[in-house]
Amino acid sequence: MNTKTADVIASGIDIDIDESTSSDDGTGRQNLRQLIQLRWIAVLGQVITILITQVSFDIPLPLTYMLTVVAGLILFNLCSLLRLRIPAAVRQTELFLVLLVDVIALTFQLYLSGGTTNPFIFLFLLQVALAAVLLKPLSTWIVVLLTACAFAGLGLVSRALHIPINPHEGLASPFVLGMLICFVLNAILLVIFITRITHNLRSRDARLATMRQRAVEEEHIVRMGLLASGAAHELGTPLATLDIILGDWAHIEPFRDNPELAQEVQEMQAQVKRCKAIVSGILMSAGEARGEALVEISVRVFLDTLVTQWRSSRQASRMMYENYFAGDVRIISDLALKQMICNVLDNALEASPRGQRLEVTREQENLVLSITDVGPGFTPTMLQRLGKPYQSSKGRPGGGLGLFLSLNVARTLGGSLVASNLPSGGACVTIRLPLSALTREETRNDV
Image (cartoon, rainbow, N blue to C red):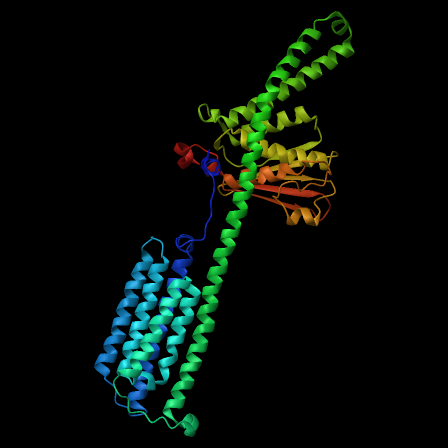
């Protein structure tokens, strides 16, 4: 059985948004992929612009040098695609260097085609906008400084571009037409790519929020586990004392000769033994003793035994049990798994003493348990806050921990727990667990 989650919780969980966070969760790779797509568009746009300028407007350009820069961008993009195949995280430094290459390439192209007199000079703003979204403040300001220096340098040194400005001619002027194309290109690319990058960042933030919430819930479970193990230690002595006293009472004349009193003493002894078994289970689970003597059992036998014990201890003879599990898969009889199922059955019994139903099925490599009742069902608030502690309709202090603990056990095993209301009345809780998480590692290939 997998105990890594408990080990992580016990050692403490600390989630920070740092340079590696955006990479480890895939956001850095997604952003690099967006920049690669942007660079392909830039390459295509540069080739088209060079051809139109050279052919349609008959403006001479240093084609050899400009196409060399385009070839360099193509080669760099191919290298970036190879980088995506490497599983290592894409960090902020890499994104900064990628943007720096784009700024340098754009600067060379503008130097070869008129410098500040080139209407496409304002493509520098696109690089600044991408840096503001992708990079940390310090890196963003470095990009701002570099683009400003490049702009100033192009104003001082550049190859002359013989293009008539003539702004009074409107769109008939190549310069004005180039500015319009530059504006439209900037606007479209900003909308498309910043929207995508923002979506990536929001997805990352949502995953981090889920991780934080999960850490808080699991920390709450650890605290409850520590309290439970402490209480179990404290309860051991008084329960043992009660067991001895009841054993003595069973042999005392007033109880031995009175059948009714003798039956009550036997019932109390049975309940004390049940309490001692629960306490022993808590201590054994807390001490990881179960890892030394794991019991392997088939799914059908495990559930049949669990249902029989649950029925006898709760006197729940009205619970219907239907086991349609196909095949005979051997799993580990684990205390946490038993408690999870019993918690859900207990909730169904309390909500619907008239009857409950447990149906067991197999969906591919998953064990599916459907527990239904004919009670009042879940309130909308409880369904929305399923899995939160102390969400209960019973109205007693400390209630609502059963589903909370069961849901977290299911998550630890890689499964799920879903609650819903039935159209005909009553509630349904469906537990779905992967069989691979319930078996020994050496027997998983046989499942």
